[in-house]
Length: 150
Image (cartoon, rainbow, N blue to C red):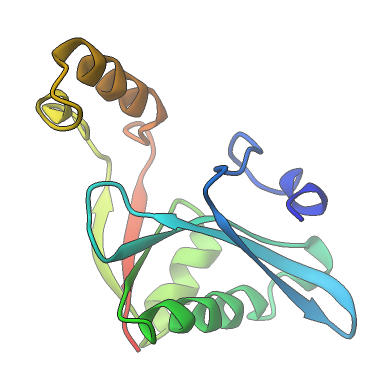
């Protein structure tokens, strides 16, 4: 289901294989998509992964309404939801929406420093995991992290 949306996402166009996929339709047409994944090392937390609204539906609040409805499904199951973004229009929409609480913004320096002490118990393997996380980190971009409340 990700195929029609991937070219409109600003990052690497791949979808995490463990993502639960959600789509939004308007009058029978695909309009938006998101994936929801487990938030690493945070029990009871999910994370929004790859939120995309197709160009014909952008700028009219579809994305915010969509992600609110998807997030509500998880909160109703007793889970917490986080969304981290760099997209200015989404940041503005979430700041105005009372269902999202801004928890952090700025550049993440050394975001994954020390992660090698967690994980498998194998220091070499953990170091490799930590380096992989470090490469995917958004330490060179200003990011905004929001938590959903119902």
